[in-house]
Image (cartoon, rainbow, N blue to C red):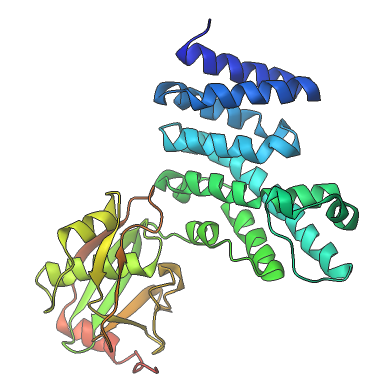
Length: 337
């Protein structure tokens, strides 16, 4: 009997051999064995298996390819090299979204109507006849590819340096527009900012601050970390979020209730909704700029990370001199809501 690391590596080897031999029956059997071995594997085995599976992911038949990508993502979440795995996962996801784009085009061209869901039971032979097998497989597999890609994008090294993100972002946006499906997790993960400068101006006091953010998935998380840095740091009056809320917005698991300290406004006077993400904040003179106004009403939410596997960072780099903050404030509009 084969145990532990040898068992999983043997299952990967058997699946790889069958895939590269283009032996469908053997690949199906080996895929079942891979599933069983994967479920019993420890971190050390998964660390090695992730890059191995990624290396031949493009050769895996379309049916099991997305599930194999999810396995690669699970390996990365348990410590496998995200940089080594990400290019293959992004390439596979891009191909699936391109097929889904064809699905949407053919669906519209053959009468339109509500698009089916992505689950097995939602797609039938009639859909294959209507839009084609590859398009159906692409559409059906999108949730798995979204999950696998987010696992890669949890790593800052991937977000900053891995190729293929721009092409993937473009086709995801096209499918979002064609289908009305937001694919919010993937869209937000592709838009996460790293080492991004942010200017923050408090309208009431005239104070200004230069901060730098990384790994923040949405503006709820940004709002909480800003309140910690500026109120908790003693720079502005108010009630700071709890240490637990701040920790959960940085790198600790879980969520806890917190209450908003500000109303976030862009330089154009439009509200910056907490439901959005930092990449949507308007830019002024090459830097994103946030104006803090008093909250118009009390608003509470579960504080934590939008992406539980992604570390959120917000660093206060400096307090702006009064004249610098004043010069910036004259460029911003009053809140328009």
